[in-house]
Image 1 (cartoon, rainbow, N blue to C red):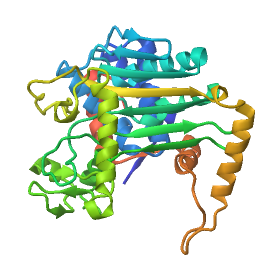
Image 2 (image 1 turned 60 degrees about the horizontal axis):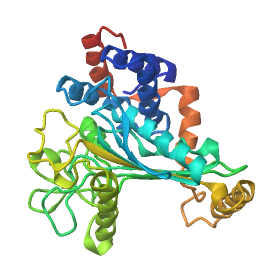
Image 3 (image 1 turned 135 degrees about the horizontal axis):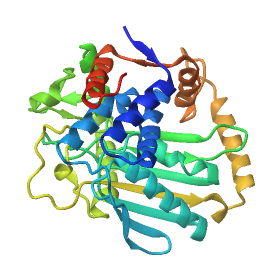
Image 4 (image 1 turned 135 degrees about the vertical axis):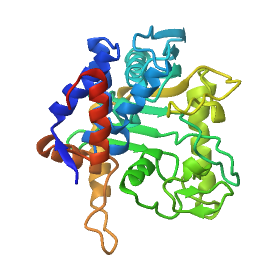
Length: 358
């Protein structure tokens, strides 16, 4: 049975844990907002359920809670940022703000990041741009859990892409998706529920289809978006590769199978070609292309027309990217955030460790 917690309750708990880990009050607030944005939007795989994972990385001395985040190379429209092994939940908002500031000055901003860690949901960072009439983009490489098309070797992460586009009367268009058939966090949720995966999510160590949610612990792999060659896995493989190159090869982070694993108990890959995880952010000022009000009016028109497209049999309506998360946000801010009992138990143990009561 799920337990229900208010946003404010989870916020105070999570912020207190980050402070006890050594984060400044400002960084703890930044990290908490980024992390809980996932729970509010219904992306339970990337919210407080991940908090204990960050704690374990910190205990393994793989997260620096007092980082010197700095720009190490830049032009008027681009920058490379060294995250100094900080929480990705802190490094990423810093980097996205740099991209936004550059866009304000010269029309667009592009920022690649090295030496960081898991940054939560990509959509949170992309959405930072919306209030400025700026289109935001965010992506990151991640632990190598994904086998490329025709391979049994894990080479890529789930490598998400998010794009946030402002509108006027209509809610913003927000696409946020992994380049795999399913994110690893969804596997973790199924594991807690002792449930099987749908077809096409994973393969075993020999490349055979399986529905075992624990298959990654048995040398299996996640599959690229599309699940197999006949259904377009080569496209998911290509998208994941683009994210890896933009985020890590471009910045100087570790890429491909050398990306640092999120679980602290997994040994770091040997002979890493770069530093930490990598991210990539983009910001494009709308009025660098056409007047912002004009653009947003046409975005309203675009969204309205797609939302009113004739639904297929069995469906009530056509959704716009961002609709499910927006609707879930309204519900959870009002009614609370449900957490699986296994997550509550996990957080309770974290609280005991730091003297913070859940």
